[in-house]
Picture 1 (cartoon, rainbow, N blue to C red):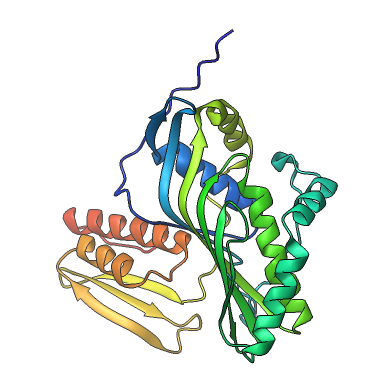
Picture 2: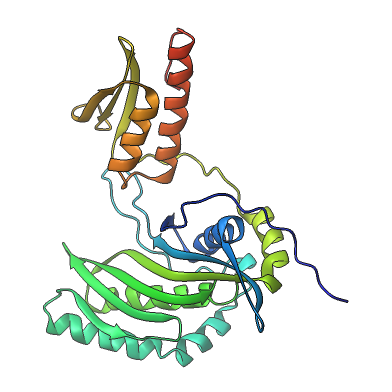
Amino acid sequence: MEHTPARRKVYSSRKTSFPLFSHDVGDSWLQLLNLVLRIGTEKSSADAGRTAQVLNAMVTIGLPVIAEDLEVAPIKPEAFSSFLGIQPDEFERYFEAWNGARHIDAACEHLAGNSGARSDALVRLSPHTLSASFDVIDGTIFGSFVVRTIDVFRDWPLEAMALLRVLRETGTRMDLEVGAATFVVQSALLHERDWSQAEPVLAEHFRRPLPLQVDHSGVFLFGNDGGKARGMLLDHDASAIFWEDAFENPDQLSWYIVDTMPWLLPQHIRYVGQECSTLKRAMEERACYLQG
Protein backbone atom coordinates (compact mmCIF):
# COMPACT_ATOMS: atom_id res chain seq x y z
CA MET A 1 0.00 0.00 0.00
CA GLU A 2 1.43 3.34 -1.02
CA HIS A 3 2.17 5.66 1.86
CA THR A 4 0.89 9.23 1.65
CA PRO A 5 2.90 11.62 3.84
CA ALA A 6 1.09 14.05 6.08
CA ARG A 7 0.30 17.39 4.48
CA ARG A 8 2.79 19.97 5.66
CA LYS A 9 1.79 23.52 6.52
CA VAL A 10 4.77 25.68 5.57
CA TYR A 11 5.08 29.04 7.29
CA SER A 12 6.58 32.06 5.57
CA SER A 13 10.23 32.79 6.32
CA ARG A 14 13.09 34.91 5.05
CA LYS A 15 14.87 31.73 3.88
CA THR A 16 18.10 32.80 5.54
CA SER A 17 20.02 31.62 8.60
CA PHE A 18 18.13 30.23 11.59
CA PRO A 19 19.72 30.31 15.08
CA LEU A 20 18.68 27.54 17.48
CA PHE A 21 19.77 27.24 21.11
CA SER A 22 19.58 24.04 23.09
CA HIS A 23 20.84 22.21 26.17
CA ASP A 24 21.37 18.74 24.69
CA VAL A 25 21.26 16.70 21.49
CA GLY A 26 17.73 15.43 22.03
CA ASP A 27 16.24 18.91 22.33
CA SER A 28 18.31 20.18 19.38
CA TRP A 29 16.94 17.28 17.32
CA LEU A 30 13.37 18.26 18.14
CA GLN A 31 14.07 21.89 17.28
CA LEU A 32 15.63 20.95 13.94
CA LEU A 33 12.74 18.63 13.09
CA ASN A 34 10.29 21.40 13.90
CA LEU A 35 12.26 23.94 11.87
CA VAL A 36 12.63 21.83 8.73
CA LEU A 37 9.13 20.37 8.87
CA ARG A 38 7.35 23.70 9.46
CA ILE A 39 9.23 26.15 7.23
CA GLY A 40 11.59 24.04 5.13
CA THR A 41 11.36 24.68 1.42
CA GLU A 42 10.56 21.67 -0.73
CA LYS A 43 12.64 20.21 -3.52
CA SER A 44 12.13 17.05 -5.54
CA SER A 45 14.38 14.48 -7.18
CA ALA A 46 13.75 11.28 -9.11
CA ASP A 47 15.53 9.06 -6.58
CA ALA A 48 14.70 10.71 -3.23
CA GLY A 49 11.21 12.08 -3.88
CA ARG A 50 10.17 15.21 -2.00
CA THR A 51 12.52 16.67 0.59
CA ALA A 52 12.07 19.58 3.00
CA GLN A 53 15.24 21.64 3.36
CA VAL A 54 16.50 24.48 5.54
CA LEU A 55 19.73 26.26 4.66
CA ASN A 56 22.26 27.68 7.11
CA ALA A 57 20.75 26.60 10.41
CA MET A 58 22.99 27.47 13.36
CA VAL A 59 22.61 25.20 16.39
CA THR A 60 24.28 26.05 19.69
CA ILE A 61 24.29 23.35 22.37
CA GLY A 62 25.25 24.35 25.87
CA LEU A 63 23.46 27.45 27.13
CA PRO A 64 24.50 29.67 30.03
CA VAL A 65 22.31 29.14 33.08
CA ILE A 66 21.63 31.68 35.75
CA ALA A 67 22.86 30.78 39.20
CA GLU A 68 23.93 33.06 42.01
CA ASP A 69 27.41 33.29 40.51
CA LEU A 70 26.25 33.19 36.84
CA GLU A 71 28.18 30.02 36.04
CA VAL A 72 28.03 28.38 32.64
CA ALA A 73 26.40 24.96 32.53
CA PRO A 74 28.70 22.25 31.13
CA ILE A 75 27.63 20.19 28.14
CA LYS A 76 26.00 17.01 29.36
CA PRO A 77 27.33 13.53 28.57
CA GLU A 78 25.38 11.59 25.96
CA ALA A 79 21.73 11.46 27.00
CA PHE A 80 20.00 8.55 25.30
CA SER A 81 16.48 9.98 25.38
CA SER A 82 13.85 7.39 24.61
CA PHE A 83 12.45 9.36 21.66
CA LEU A 84 15.86 9.33 19.95
CA GLY A 85 15.73 5.55 19.60
CA ILE A 86 19.51 5.26 20.16
CA GLN A 87 21.08 2.72 22.51
CA PRO A 88 24.50 3.28 24.15
CA ASP A 89 26.08 0.31 22.36
CA GLU A 90 24.82 1.64 19.00
CA PHE A 91 26.47 4.97 19.67
CA GLU A 92 29.75 3.32 20.69
CA ARG A 93 29.84 1.39 17.41
CA TYR A 94 29.13 4.58 15.50
CA PHE A 95 31.82 6.50 17.38
CA GLU A 96 34.40 3.79 16.71
CA ALA A 97 33.58 3.59 13.00
CA TRP A 98 33.57 7.40 12.91
CA ASN A 99 37.19 7.38 14.16
CA GLY A 100 36.23 9.46 17.17
CA ALA A 101 39.26 8.48 19.26
CA ARG A 102 41.59 9.57 16.45
CA HIS A 103 39.80 12.91 16.18
CA ILE A 104 40.25 13.49 19.92
CA ASP A 105 43.96 12.67 19.69
CA ALA A 106 44.37 15.07 16.76
CA ALA A 107 42.51 17.89 18.53
CA CYS A 108 44.63 17.53 21.67
CA GLU A 109 47.85 17.40 19.65
CA HIS A 110 47.11 20.56 17.70
CA LEU A 111 45.80 22.48 20.71
CA ALA A 112 48.94 21.59 22.62
CA GLY A 113 51.10 22.63 19.65
CA ASN A 114 49.30 25.97 19.43
CA SER A 115 49.48 26.61 23.18
CA GLY A 116 45.71 26.48 23.41
CA ALA A 117 45.11 28.85 20.53
CA ARG A 118 42.49 28.27 17.89
CA SER A 119 42.80 24.92 16.13
CA ASP A 120 41.32 24.28 12.69
CA ALA A 121 43.10 20.97 12.31
CA LEU A 122 40.15 18.59 12.07
CA VAL A 123 38.93 18.72 8.47
CA ARG A 124 36.45 16.39 6.80
CA LEU A 125 35.60 14.37 9.89
CA SER A 126 32.82 12.44 8.16
CA PRO A 127 30.60 12.56 5.05
CA HIS A 128 28.42 15.03 6.98
CA THR A 129 30.92 17.21 8.85
CA LEU A 130 33.41 19.30 6.90
CA SER A 131 35.52 20.73 9.71
CA ALA A 132 35.91 21.27 13.45
CA SER A 133 37.53 24.27 15.11
CA PHE A 134 38.28 24.87 18.78
CA ASP A 135 38.86 28.03 20.77
CA VAL A 136 40.19 28.24 24.31
CA ILE A 137 39.01 31.33 26.17
CA ASP A 138 39.82 31.85 29.85
CA GLY A 139 40.41 28.16 30.41
CA THR A 140 37.25 27.03 28.59
CA ILE A 141 37.20 25.19 25.26
CA PHE A 142 34.49 25.98 22.69
CA GLY A 143 33.76 24.02 19.52
CA SER A 144 32.62 25.16 16.08
CA PHE A 145 31.53 22.50 13.57
CA VAL A 146 30.61 22.98 9.91
CA VAL A 147 28.06 20.38 8.78
CA ARG A 148 27.51 20.36 5.02
CA THR A 149 24.40 18.25 4.36
CA ILE A 150 22.68 16.02 6.88
CA ASP A 151 19.48 14.00 7.18
CA VAL A 152 18.01 15.51 10.32
CA PHE A 153 15.75 12.58 11.15
CA ARG A 154 18.23 9.74 10.72
CA ASP A 155 21.75 11.17 11.02
CA TRP A 156 21.74 14.29 13.22
CA PRO A 157 21.56 12.68 16.71
CA LEU A 158 24.52 10.31 16.25
CA GLU A 159 26.67 12.89 14.43
CA ALA A 160 26.00 15.63 16.99
CA MET A 161 26.64 13.27 19.91
CA ALA A 162 29.96 12.20 18.37
CA LEU A 163 31.10 15.79 17.85
CA LEU A 164 30.14 16.73 21.39
CA ARG A 165 32.11 13.81 22.76
CA VAL A 166 35.18 15.00 20.83
CA LEU A 167 34.77 18.46 22.36
CA ARG A 168 34.12 17.18 25.88
CA GLU A 169 36.91 14.61 25.98
CA THR A 170 39.39 17.00 24.38
CA GLY A 171 38.61 19.45 27.16
CA THR A 172 39.03 16.77 29.80
CA ARG A 173 42.42 15.67 28.46
CA MET A 174 43.64 19.27 28.21
CA ASP A 175 42.33 20.07 31.71
CA LEU A 176 39.90 22.67 30.35
CA GLU A 177 36.32 23.54 31.18
CA VAL A 178 33.94 22.70 28.33
CA GLY A 179 31.85 25.50 26.85
CA ALA A 180 29.24 25.61 24.13
CA ALA A 181 29.36 23.84 20.77
CA THR A 182 28.05 25.62 17.68
CA PHE A 183 27.02 23.72 14.54
CA VAL A 184 26.67 25.55 11.22
CA VAL A 185 24.39 23.25 9.22
CA GLN A 186 24.60 24.29 5.60
CA SER A 187 21.73 22.02 4.49
CA ALA A 188 19.36 20.33 6.94
CA LEU A 189 17.14 17.78 5.16
CA LEU A 190 13.99 15.91 6.09
CA HIS A 191 12.92 13.37 3.49
CA GLU A 192 9.31 12.70 2.61
CA ARG A 193 9.50 9.15 3.97
CA ASP A 194 10.09 10.56 7.48
CA TRP A 195 7.52 13.38 7.59
CA SER A 196 4.77 11.22 9.05
CA GLN A 197 7.17 9.83 11.69
CA ALA A 198 8.43 13.26 12.69
CA GLU A 199 4.94 14.63 13.38
CA PRO A 200 4.05 12.33 16.33
CA VAL A 201 7.54 12.71 17.83
CA LEU A 202 7.10 16.48 17.83
CA ALA A 203 3.52 16.28 19.11
CA GLU A 204 4.59 14.17 22.11
CA HIS A 205 7.98 15.60 23.03
CA PHE A 206 8.36 19.11 21.59
CA ARG A 207 6.40 21.15 24.09
CA ARG A 208 6.79 24.92 24.12
CA PRO A 209 6.95 27.38 25.73
CA LEU A 210 9.70 26.23 28.05
CA PRO A 211 9.73 27.27 31.70
CA LEU A 212 10.96 30.85 31.95
CA GLN A 213 14.74 31.18 32.08
CA VAL A 214 16.37 34.32 33.39
CA ASP A 215 18.49 35.90 30.66
CA HIS A 216 22.08 36.61 31.74
CA SER A 217 21.96 39.86 29.73
CA GLY A 218 19.71 41.59 32.25
CA VAL A 219 16.06 42.63 32.59
CA PHE A 220 13.94 45.00 30.49
CA LEU A 221 11.65 47.76 31.67
CA PHE A 222 9.12 49.35 29.31
CA GLY A 223 6.83 52.34 29.63
CA ASN A 224 4.85 55.15 28.01
CA ASP A 225 7.05 58.24 28.28
CA GLY A 226 4.88 61.16 27.19
CA GLY A 227 3.59 59.34 24.12
CA LYS A 228 6.88 57.67 23.27
CA ALA A 229 7.76 54.03 23.86
CA ARG A 230 10.72 53.88 26.24
CA GLY A 231 12.80 50.82 27.00
CA MET A 232 15.60 50.11 29.47
CA LEU A 233 17.93 47.16 29.95
CA LEU A 234 19.13 46.86 33.54
CA ASP A 235 21.39 44.60 35.55
CA HIS A 236 19.51 41.88 37.45
CA ASP A 237 19.68 43.81 40.72
CA ALA A 238 18.86 47.13 38.97
CA SER A 239 22.27 48.50 40.03
CA ALA A 240 23.23 49.58 36.51
CA ILE A 241 21.48 50.68 33.31
CA PHE A 242 23.06 49.00 30.28
CA TRP A 243 20.87 50.68 27.66
CA GLU A 244 18.00 53.17 27.47
CA ASP A 245 16.18 54.87 24.61
CA ALA A 246 12.77 56.17 23.52
CA PHE A 247 11.04 55.54 20.18
CA GLU A 248 8.05 56.93 18.33
CA ASN A 249 6.08 53.71 18.85
CA PRO A 250 6.45 50.23 20.42
CA ASP A 251 7.03 48.64 16.99
CA GLN A 252 10.23 50.64 16.52
CA LEU A 253 11.28 49.78 20.08
CA SER A 254 10.88 46.03 19.59
CA TRP A 255 12.54 46.06 16.15
CA TYR A 256 15.54 47.91 17.57
CA ILE A 257 16.01 45.41 20.39
CA VAL A 258 15.70 42.36 18.13
CA ASP A 259 18.05 43.82 15.49
CA THR A 260 20.78 45.08 17.82
CA MET A 261 20.76 42.53 20.66
CA PRO A 262 21.08 39.11 18.99
CA TRP A 263 22.63 37.59 22.12
CA LEU A 264 19.28 37.57 23.95
CA LEU A 265 17.71 34.20 24.69
CA PRO A 266 14.75 33.31 22.42
CA GLN A 267 12.42 33.47 25.42
CA HIS A 268 13.63 36.97 26.21
CA ILE A 269 12.95 38.10 22.65
CA ARG A 270 9.46 36.59 22.87
CA TYR A 271 8.91 38.48 26.11
CA VAL A 272 10.00 41.73 24.43
CA GLY A 273 7.47 41.14 21.66
CA GLN A 274 4.67 40.41 24.10
CA GLU A 275 5.35 43.48 26.22
CA CYS A 276 5.74 45.83 23.25
CA SER A 277 2.44 44.53 21.88
CA THR A 278 0.75 45.20 25.23
CA LEU A 279 2.36 48.65 25.42
CA LYS A 280 1.17 49.47 21.89
CA ARG A 281 -2.40 48.48 22.73
CA ALA A 282 -2.34 50.56 25.91
CA MET A 283 -1.02 53.63 24.05
CA GLU A 284 -3.63 53.29 21.29
CA GLU A 285 -6.44 52.94 23.84
CA ARG A 286 -4.98 55.66 26.10
CA ALA A 287 -4.99 53.14 28.93
CA CYS A 288 -2.52 52.54 31.72
CA TYR A 289 0.28 50.15 30.77
CA LEU A 290 1.34 47.65 33.41
CA GLN A 291 4.35 45.50 32.60
CA GLY A 292 3.64 41.80 33.13
